[in-house]
Length: 103
Image (tube, rainbow, N blue to C red; front, side):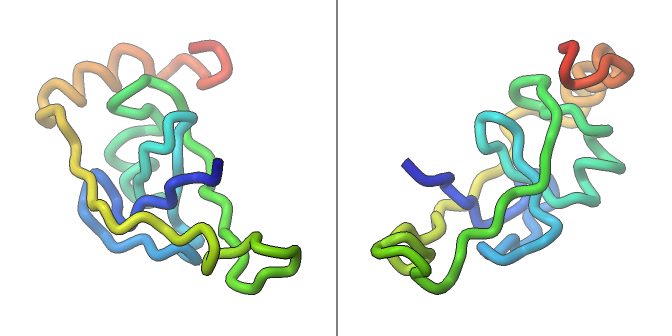
């Protein structure tokens, strides 16, 4: 199963196409732009509490048979935060000083 490659930042709604180098994901594939991860979320996923990593870029060309963006296309379903900013701030403040690998 391939990553979902969500099309937008769940924080600011910035478009994040499959080749976006500023797309970040958590272990549950929550997707945010690097600016939101750094300045809004402080590397804390507002949904699971984990950290973020750069989202891999899926190859456009099928370098191996049936393995490429054309065979596993990016999602078109846009996502948005399900928590309000007050709740997110409380959540982040509680754990942002704990390294992701220790959360």
